[in-house]
Amino acid sequence: MEIERLEKRNHYEEIAEQIRGMITGGKLKVGDKLPSTKEMAERFGVGRSTMREALSALKAVGLIEIRQGGVCRVLREQPMSEAVGALDALQLQGSTLLELLEARQSLESSNAAIAARKRTEADIESLRSIVNQMQQAAGDDAEGERLDLAFHQGLALATHNSIIVQLFETIMLQTANAIRDVRRVEIYANQDIAQQLYREHSAILDAVIQGQPQQASEAVQVHLQHVENIVHKHVR
View 1 (cartoon, rainbow, N blue to C red):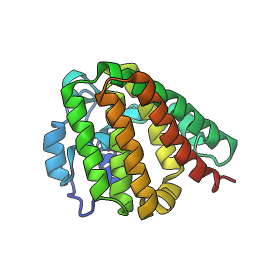
View 2 (view 1 turned 90 degrees about the horizontal axis):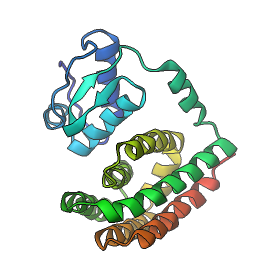
View 3 (view 1 turned 30 degrees about the vertical axis):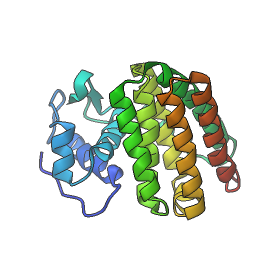
View 4 (view 1 turned 135 degrees about the vertical axis):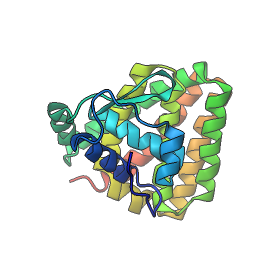
């Protein structure tokens, strides 16, 4: 794979676009195996969580598949146009966006409850590391957004349910795209709100660590309702 090394952080969109170009341009063929996540992260000069976000974006449009153990292979030469069109429609302002946020809250509340029952020590350590980085990155909009996505993805992965992970990736990636500007300006760049988000994520993590499904679910609801309240102010 010939890639262009990135100069800035949090560019999973750029990474996904580069790989997408290799696939649609024929440099990567159907069935080709991509390098490991670790190797690609090193080549692009980003963390593994950013690399995983890029791969998830490619998987969401059907270009690659991610198999057991993280092995990625090219699945098709072009994105699933019908699926992409349907998902792009979710980015419309108004009631559609609010429905998307409502769907996310419902899904992630369940995710947290399942994660509290099924999480492993490795899951806990990964989530704890992300939350610790959140505290240090308060006020950094790009890093705050990256870590937030990584935490919620880690929560989905901690369910050890591939269907849940696929549902999460579909809903979360579209939510992130639809409200990116609001998220960065109103949420992550604001020190006070960033600190509040850190506390909310910490509460979710504590419930997951303690194996308390109901408390984990409720903590997610509190957190996502907070985010939804902010977004509501900007929905036309």
